[in-house]
Length: 302
Ligand code: AMP
Image (cartoon, rainbow, N blue to C red; front, side, top):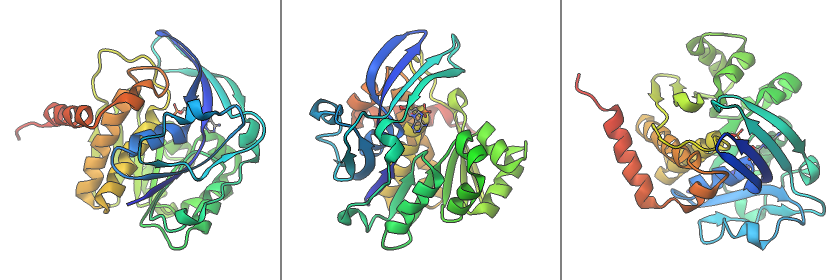
């Protein structure tokens, strides 16, 4: 089933202890769409400037990614620059130039209005809600990502949007900030009262934890010898996760668990190289092989 994603498409400057990438393709929607397109057709809603040419678009071509909803505005594409610490656990944002992203008002092209799987990437919660308002019917599954900026800055808007969402993907600090509760299991109960039935806590090199109203499931990050650039790992995870669910066409306990593993598998490819480089070249065969290794990594006899 088709999966709609709304979010940022960007040029990124990234510095890690392993090197540097300049004006590389980034943005949450880019990572998300590339990951999800391995499982299901993706409809993208985002904005770019006139410096975003066919060369950049080429990465999305030849995949199941519909770019009808990629708006071209006059001006520059959103630009972000970040630098990672030596252990790569901390990131300093060096620049955030919103450019055309500042005037972004997501508009769904007609063929997108029947989307039944929707992912609201990390943007202003009122814009996230405007996307849900445009679709013809309540989606089968709506997922949402957000960050401390919106949790602190527009709490009422965020609360209103969360009422209409099934799955929330955030990190542990954001979970605590959103709920005012330190213990993550108790925090999840607060989240359930806000709307979502599923909370996915992204924990970087420690993997991801899914707390569902009824069961809990944890996946590690796939152990890698080479981690060069963690940028976009969370967005890739969300893309693999939502893509798998949309591809399966249902979100029951079994598909939610498998989706967690595929999210983690896809994210493990992203971090091996800078930007979307590795994600853009990974094949279905490599994904399946790593998922099998993932199963061996986590299976044991009781
Ligand atoms: P992550 O590593 O998951 O935080 O995602 C990094 C991506 O998010 C980069 O490719 C950035 O272009 C994009 N990004 C950074 N800041 C923002 C922002 N304020 N709004 C939307 N996207 C952003």
